[in-house]
Length: 117
Length: 110
Image (cartoon, each protein chain N blue to C red):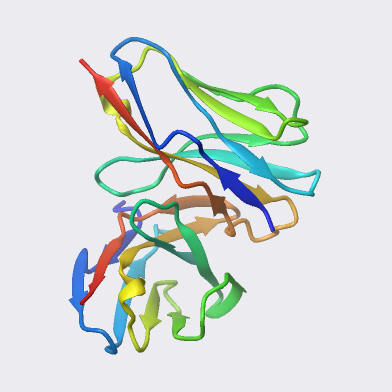
């Protein structure tokens, strides 16, 4: 079974600065998807960024980028120019490529990010 | 478009009781999945419904059951509630893999 680990329960960053959230995972599969989700106090899970394991290029979405190291099974999220609205719980998630229905995610325990003004 | 809506937002039940949670998917979405998020943890997949049938199921006991209606809305039923069932229950709807989450129902079992 796949597992996802986030070793930083809490992180804080100064507004406009850069922060990196860590995620490692364990799998025997070679094809899979990795995700970062944000959960603000509204509780809704919001997709931040997605990475396909077969792509060597790291995904980027505006101020959000990932460092995907397949051999090390590491998938960190970098948030640049942090904004107050970035404060939330961040979850790293894994989904098997064989999951044809695309819903059976394995989530990590989350990292609570605080943004200081 | 209201996106994914869940009701109620909060619920308190007594141990041993039964509870039904409801989810209305985003317009056009035909698949509904349910997740349980215990306090301080990430969501865990319970099951997924498509065309009114359970298509995938996570590692949850039979006390957890569901239903999907012809209009794609869905219910999650939990029987014989345990204190450990206290959690945030998230519904997600999708169409061809593009998934959108609701804001959840906070269930407290006392």
